[in-house]
Image 1 (cartoon, rainbow, N blue to C red):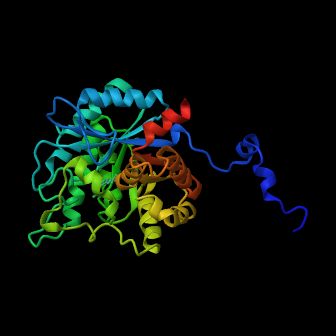
Image 2 (cartoon, rainbow, N blue to C red):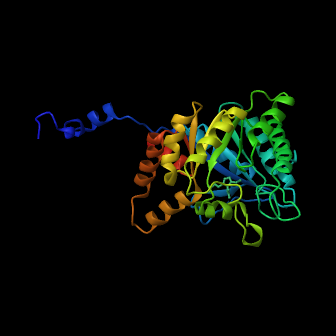
Image 3 (spheres, protein in one colour):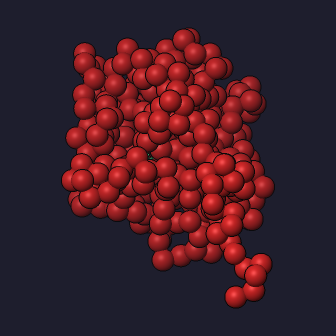
Length: 326
Ligand code: PBG
C-alpha cells in the first residue's frame, strides 16, 4: 500500500462526508404522484400503495398543502373516472375529473406549486389501452394523437403548467406541442415519458386507477422492451426534437443505465419515475421488518440523482421530504 492510498481518510467524519458528497436529495427534487377520483365523498385508501389514496377534491387540496409545507413543489395528477368508454373521453372532456381537479388546485396554489397532469387515455378507456383501438384490436397510433392533442389543450386550459404524455405513441410530443401552440398555450411545459418500459412494476398503479387491460393484453406493442437499451436514446432525441422540455425514464431502479445514457444523450432536464411497484416492494419488506424502509427509500432516490436525474417522481415524496426537513 502506498502511504497516500487511504480513501477512508475522507470518510472519517460526517462533516467531511457531507463536504465531499457529489449528490444531494432535497424536497424540491421530488414530484408527488396523486390520484383524484370522480364522484367520491371520502378518500379511499389504495391497498397496494400504503399511505396513498384515491382523493376527493378536498383531500387532494389538503395533501398538496402538506406537500408544500414539506418543501415538495411538484405534483402530478392521475384521474379515476366514474365511467369509461371506447375513446377515453374523460381524458379530454373539460368536465373530466383531472380537468376539474386542475382548476381547483390552480385556484388555490397558482404558480407556487408546479401542477402537472399525466396525459394518457388508459385510465379512461373501457379496454384499458393507452390509445384508441382499430377494428383488428391494435392501437391506432395516429388516431390516438388527435385525442392526446385534445387532452393536452383541455389540461392546459384547466391550469396544468406541465403536461406529461405517457402513452408512448410515436409523434405524441410533436402533436401535443403544435396543438398547445395553436391554442396559445406556448408556455405549457411538456414532460415526455420518453423511455418508458413495458414493466411488471406498474401493478399497484393499475389497482390505484382501476385499469385492467382487456383480454389479458399488455402494452408491449407501444412501451419499450426491457431487453433494449439503445432505442431509448432515439426515443429521447426524437422527443426533444419534437419539443419536449423535460424527458423521463420509467421505471427507475432497473434502468439506471438508461438514465445515465440519457444524461449524456440530451441536454434538457431529465427525471426518473420511481414507480408504484418500486414503492410497494420497499413498503412490503419494511412492514415485515426485513429492511429499514425510509433508509432504502433515500438510498434509491439518491441513486437516481447520482445516475443523472435532476428530479424524481416518487410515492415517497411526502414521507422523505418530511424526514429531510424535520
Ligand atoms: C399510463 C401510466 C402508467 C403509469 C403512469 N402512467 C401505467 C401503465 O403504463 O400501465 C404507472 C406509474 C406507476 O406504476 O407508478 N397512463
